[in-house]
Image 1 (cartoon, rainbow, N blue to C red):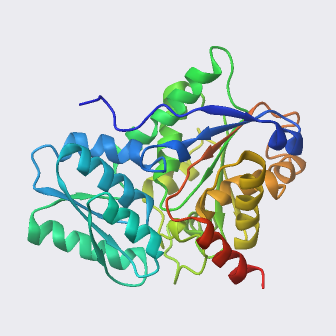
Image 2: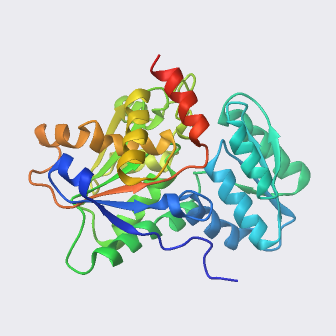
Length: 322
């Protein structure tokens, strides 16, 4: 068995995006992971540590964490039960089944599905794979920064790293990775969509809060409460985390522009990070003095996503722009 389930993804320069922000933009192409997103880094690591002698794994996820858990379980010869909320697109359910997973559809939002996954952990004796809130996940996700450092080479570092935030797992991994790389002075631009902005709500309230509902179409950002560790990082004096929110329309437009310019289709959750460039968030942060001018190379983590295809894109466009 290979040492990891994830691959070392390309770090590609984007000429079009670089032109928009006036500094070199590098894209960390997590969309090319075997399961379609960065989630496989942390989930692969966690399963290797915890699920070796297990009867099987259970994961609550409206998409990418479930895809990663199903992929890793199949490679490890384990059964996978993925509990998804009813808001998950049918194509996600189909793709999970293609990986050999049993799919249970429970509740309206991720939190409902998670309650069921925890119940199955107890009643069926399965190894519970949390989608974002576990130190082993963050340790696995930190490898994305290790790879960026290796690709950029000695003496070079990003001016800022742009990510999307759902439950906060990638944020914790990136924060850990920056700490390990000695890059504490590299700011993180944490992007969310309106209606799936649990991290931004926590930062503004000065404490972890729970959203009433997920109203954004970026369903994969749809945790109502951010993990405590992510909030703690936002309060730390060592790291700079800039929490920014874009509309669903801006996120979708970013997905479409990215498809046109870079020939890669990602989901709206990933579009939130891309919108930092396409909707002028980076330039506005520079104007406010929160990011330096000139800015060193901007690294955007293209987190990917399995819940999108051409049909889904058309559906979202009709819903958001008519």
